[in-house]
Length: 118
Length: 157
Image (cartoon, rainbow over all chains, first blue to last red; front, side):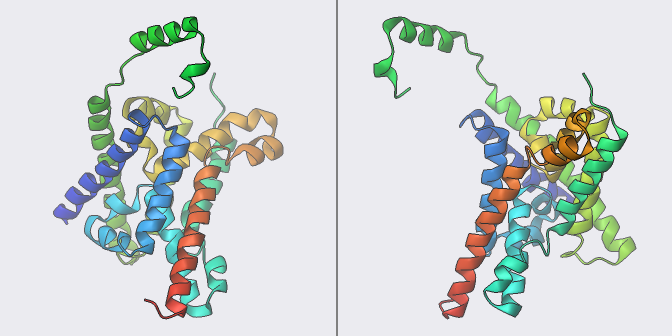
């Protein structure tokens, strides 16, 4: 259990350092950086590298935004496995629905509870 | 910078002056901060993952989903109380890259536009910042999954 925490810390931290280098060295905006990271996550899952990383680093791989790209591809491939090409469209949000729905639901609840500052 | 030829000498001089006074970004310091804050957020995520595995019978593969939802819930509270903004100023990418940063982008946009009403303000602007992540995530995932599925169908892999 402890090594899992350690690797989650290290790998998660490294993803963030990668993002910070995008910010500071390549002068990308946060929007560009996060979009790029999601695309990287999708490609990594396409070539089959993301799952081993997630097995190895746990939340260090599932918490950074790259895992969003990874789970999109995952859902699409799972469904494509059963229904062929159409599955790529229909299965897209299968795995990642929790992130999107949580963001929408908590976003709205947040807007109901909190008032804008300043 | 490639447009140097179109600029008058005064403009070039000003550019030099600007570069001289531009604040150097402390890259190494920022990276260290991003590393330990981002790492810490992922460690918290790992703790939540174990919580779901031990108390709610999720497996290591499926525990990621409720973990992400919980992290976004925490991010809502932190955003609402104004803590996440301060964390973002300190940690840069360390707070933006984890999924809590995605949650923060959605929730802060929702709260910010609340004065314009719930339909046009909150509903219309919620994904103002996070929309690009969803767009490029979905489109790249579509391309990747399409290529992989076609390769499987044609028997290449």
